[in-house]
Length: 305
Image (cartoon, rainbow, N blue to C red; front, top):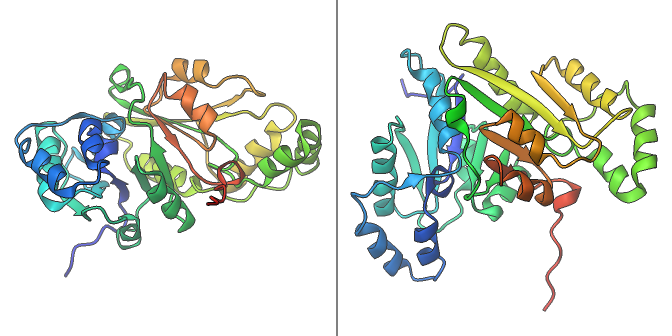
């Protein structure tokens, strides 16, 4: 009977999100595949440095340490298969038990997410992230230079989520951007009892809670926080939406427009997900950050000749 990943939390991740391949990527971006392969071959036995998402992946794999396979991490990379040898070697030398990988030699790999039934896709390639989100998969563009803070909480996975266009749909954000704060506040107060539609990361948050519920006796736990620009009275609809979904977060920060970075610096998450590039830019200075490239804030501008 074939092996399957049913019931597992499946994380698909690119090699640049997991390891620091920025120097190698600079060679790749020059557009000479042969030169890139030569560069990687010369370093096959040299483990890459840890990337922005490495601490999160390391902690998630700790849920398997008692022999029960709860989390599956799969490399989903634009690298060629030979360069993939270095990715695997880097994983092994850094203590990551990763068996599966897909290497597409420059082609977009996002369509393999369906075959994996992935719960999350992390990549440094914005185009791949957009396509994944457009196809219904939680995905974020990783900031490779994000500050890493995971060592401060070795036995707890801390994940921070924005609300609108991340956990929730962007319906309220559209009101805010088109009609301003006062209309937004009135709209949210009027519809406080009507749950928001699901955003791209609702299913991932649900997956984290399922993982936590079946892992009560393990020495690692999960702590989640909602970090939103909403403030009262718009906070109520966010809370009631989570209640309707039967999802709990451990903390909630309703910042009413304050800069999120200082609050994230205090919470010290392993990863923060937000849909707005400005929030991500400031957050990346204090914590690993992923840009959820979806919703009204991320509509692509047509390019004209």
